[in-house]
Image (cartoon, rainbow, N blue to C red):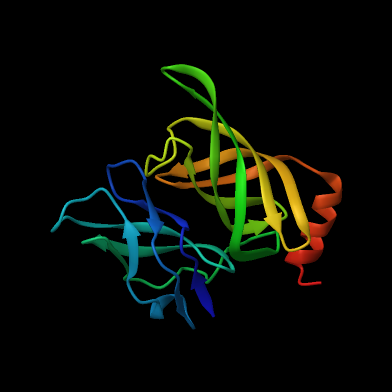
Length: 196
């Protein structure tokens, strides 16, 4: 079963343009890549704009590349993957809603500053996580330029404390990898992600 989780970052590479990063808005599943229904995504294109390119498709099983069309905020697979899933994720992962608080370190044109965050982790693995959060100023999206965050995530066994380096940031979503994680929490997380 192929699953594209909600909140996944998908990159569409079209001829003569920079890669377009899209965020899936809901989970989509199918037995095969070619059977995936259109994926609702967050895009900046207006109505009627049509783009065709090679999609870097992130699924629950790994990553593959396939021809796709973007139109009216729907991403549709229009070709078969050249070789099924070609890059498997190395870390076991779990989806859910894990309450989270923390502090983001931001560096942008205004300088460097720390901003309190609160939200929840939607996807977690032994390598990193996907955070949906807001700054305490209650703006609908995260502040631009987050370099790293110190997070306190409430997991089923207790609190997981980690420093996360930003890999991708879009609206209220931040995907990152661990720079540091509490050693005891790392052991618990590995057991949890492995289903033990």
